[in-house]
Image 1 (tube, one colour):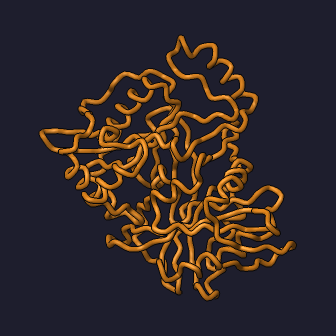
Image 2 (spheres, one colour; image 1 turned 135 degrees about the vertical axis):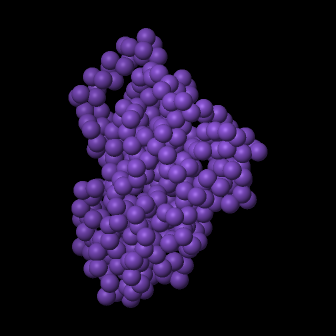
Image 3 (cartoon, one colour; image 1 turned 135 degrees about the horizontal axis):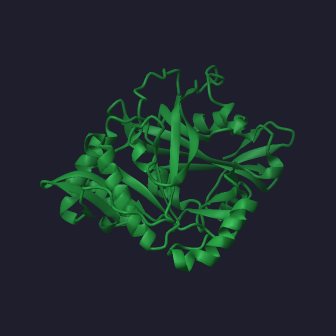
Length: 373
């Protein structure tokens, strides 16, 4: 099935599958972001479809074709999440990339209604994450599509903060909480903590024991040994998983600015003495670990800090460059991550509703899983 788009050059929207994987990865490579003197590609080698297969059921990929050349692509993924405390099917519009020579032709605007109409029967509410100052994407948020057949309304409900914590420096342990690796007999308590964290949050993850165990089996490089817990008086007070997602996503260096080139040169000279890894060359990926599946009883900043601190020591000893923690900007738990050296990347969280439904949802603490974003 295909559909025409109106632009200065005739184009078609067509379904994509793994035969398109090389062309999609090349468009991704041509779409780096610039932050703090660093040009970086959010890469998905070797298979751009792999991450979506872990999260969505289904994921609908569509490409924008000029003649037979792929000019860009996007995806709508569907999954269950909490909405006002109830399990609800939701949609996530994501992975929209256009090659440089085809930008500015209105593909995103023209294609948005197509994506939403196609999946209107699957979900009536959804979300998108839009990087700040991405003017083309920001311009699509609002009521401009409210009069269309899909009746789309959208608004920004908050910001997503991705905190990249640099693992370059030794630190003293400064918490009295004891952290240990989780065991199989902790699973019920871990699931209880995660449910308590996610059920009150808009788009929180739906977790039960069977699903948790199934995820341990299907998620690459993640086992119960990668979960850490805080235990006090025989009761779990917090949990956090450390997930190396490099099997399906990487933060790959495109180029360094002058200042960071000097920093990298210095790191080559001092890495052995300082006990930290050399920064990657252009074309190489950072060794990152994502902090995911986290929860702290009563949203305790100190429990969360203890978990992050313990993982900091472990992954610094393993010569990782960074660990990445995120939540919505209003989440007080973010203060725990900001006690470590690093930087923030901030994006908008847009709430979307179809079919003329309103946007009155409890959006005080919207949830986005950075490990699968």
